[in-house]
Image (cartoon, rainbow, N blue to C red; front, side, top):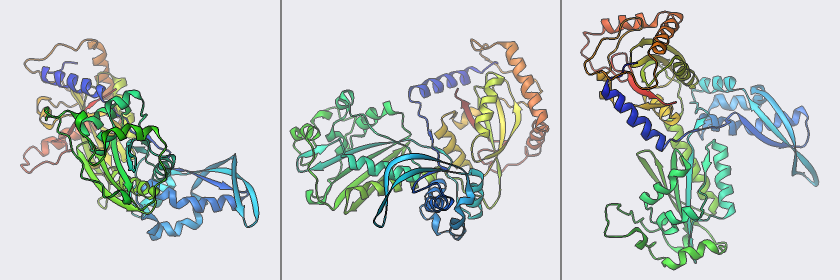
Length: 467
């Protein structure tokens, strides 16, 4: 495959850069629920289904108020009808009923995704797909002894419980010796973002949540001292947490922290790409801070990635995909796109010497599709102006020659590329001649002078496939 030099260089830089900080979203089993029951009776199982149904709907839809929907409320009494399987395991937990105690059984309930999807669609509620962003959580607390980057066990339990309820995968720092050299409690308390981001790279998370919390008896949380990485005259090690002696910081991490009395104050910073959102909170118990923080974070991500049924129905979005160097690579990209929850259908539009153009029929808009592709990290977005240097040629036609073409990239066999193009042409014929239709569309729209939306045949979204 002959690549123009500019495109070849761009692909190399992007692929090399991505490999250095590749993140990966996590697949969450959002259609599974757990419950403790006394026996394997049908009545116990149906009661457990009704009890867990609300949690499941909130997790799949991403909407905290989903149970207020009349369609969902009407479905709760028949929750068992949405199951496709269940299983039991032994448990050491006890259930108390009056004066009697029972050894509980752990019941796993598996709900049918298609049935739940139809219910949410009937209720006009969104579906937040199972591919969820991994959230790295940094916590720093302050008490009478100073700062501590090691939270109490109850803090972790509260975070994990809230995250499990919403289907949000969490990652926690290791706080090992290497990390302690990069980041101190004072750095976290001051929100030294340069150091926090540097220490976060190893976890390959999709977003970072930083929580600073303290009992209200310690006074308000002071404004963060954002360290300017360009201010070289001030060493980062000289920055101290406001009002906290530096020598107390390390000691606090080594000694057990005495239980403090509420109410509790917290400030949270959520970093997701170029977006930063802050939240202040006050609760009577410390676990309330973490429940609220996870709820807010889950609401944010659901707004970014949940698929809302459109009143306009399914719509087409066109992608131009580069770095497809074999038919096997194309099939991988095809399987990935067709596996997205929002994609109903994928058609091949055209093939060039540099790329493949596909039309996706989706239940989502361009913004949501781009957010989802960014989360998956399999397709890397190219700047829009790069599309102008890539000639568009329908499958089955000869690619137009361009001056300054680069030689065939090393490791790419010309004969294999010819087989690849023939295989794609055959694939197009199986899809009903989408390429010819696309060519007709382009001809008929050539005289249109109105602004063409991104993701159309005239202005496709340009991506590079990452293996």
